[in-house]
Amino acid sequence: MRLLREFTTSNVLNRWMVSALSSIGILAAVAGILDAFFPDVFEPRGWAYLGIVFAVSVLWATFDAWPLEKYTRNFSELNTTITIEIGDLFEQPGHLVIGMTDTFDTALPRIITERSIQGQLLMREYGGKVTKLDREIARTLKDVQPIKVETVQNKPDGKRKRYSIGTVISLGSVHRYYYCCAYSYMSNALVAQATPESLWTGLFNVWQAVRDSSQQATVSMPLVGSGLAKLSNQLCRKDILRLILLSFVAASRERVVTKHLKIIIHPDDVRDISMMELIETLKGI
Image (cartoon, rainbow, N blue to C red):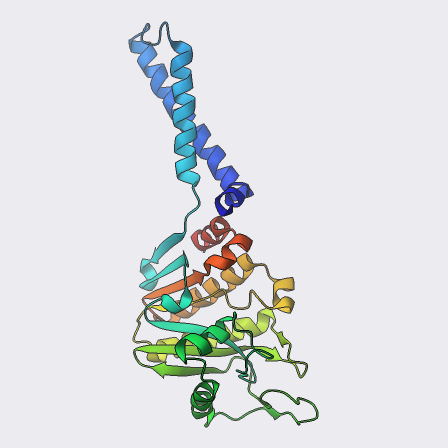
């Protein structure tokens, strides 16, 4: 179903048509040259040869436009590589980028859903032990001044200390850091909200944290923010990817952030995403 959907997108169809027409043109040119030197070479089976040309062109165009599950682009001038790949974020080697809110709430399931990236961080990397995760978050935030503390009346559930949008904390260890970025605002009604501006601010702070401590090892991240209603109403996934790429390239022009950035699309999300469009976005940066 995914492949069929991919093939019906305008980018894939356009690529298929260009490849098919190009191959027909090349084969026709070759046939013309042969016919000039060997006038009877295509007689008496001209229609059969025409069918072969058509079949070869269709097969080549299908091969050329076939949707990819992984695409890598090397930026030699920046000494870095970016990969877009279908896979499981938590099975990737190296460090991970995790999106969080300005309160760094962690409680399942009322505040944070288990299916979310943050929920998977708790369940898969911390064994579902929320007190262990909270203890590590508190330790990394001990020298960070909150900008506001909500009252029990205003925010009866969850954490009440608010930190600046864009705050980044590094959980884990030097072998595998979890760069947790507060790019969204957690309302007192427990609804996470983000804007393009808050995501941009958070990304730049993430790149600074990665540059400072990752030792240029591989860093993997999801399409952060694509699941938030307010942000997804303003930016499609392609735009979110472009925001990630532009911020990373801009930061890399100042100084190398990491040798390899991987943007991971979970298999369950592929039905809502055109990989070809994402790949074309990476090619266009």
